[in-house]
Length: 110
Image (cartoon, rainbow, N blue to C red; front, side, top):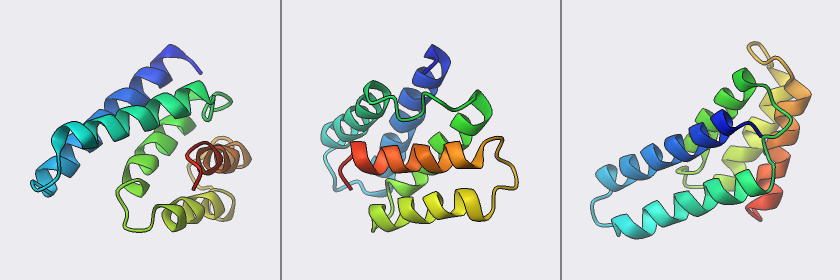
């Protein structure tokens, strides 16, 4: 994974953590930030997005941020997995994106 992708993953997950805390002020900010930081680290270390170009990685990272705050994370990620090959309109490598979602599900044990 390129450093720029790793940086984007960390930055966007951090921004998502902040958004979660703002939307749900009753949650512990430090815990939410730690959870998203750990997820970003696991995905980076697990090379989940390593095979994607920057364009597809940007899309996957943005979609991960949405999926990870869904009430049913697994279902949200599976929908993106299937959608990558069913409706790949803007993707450079739909099969690679589907593989990335599969990697995320495996790495995060969902």
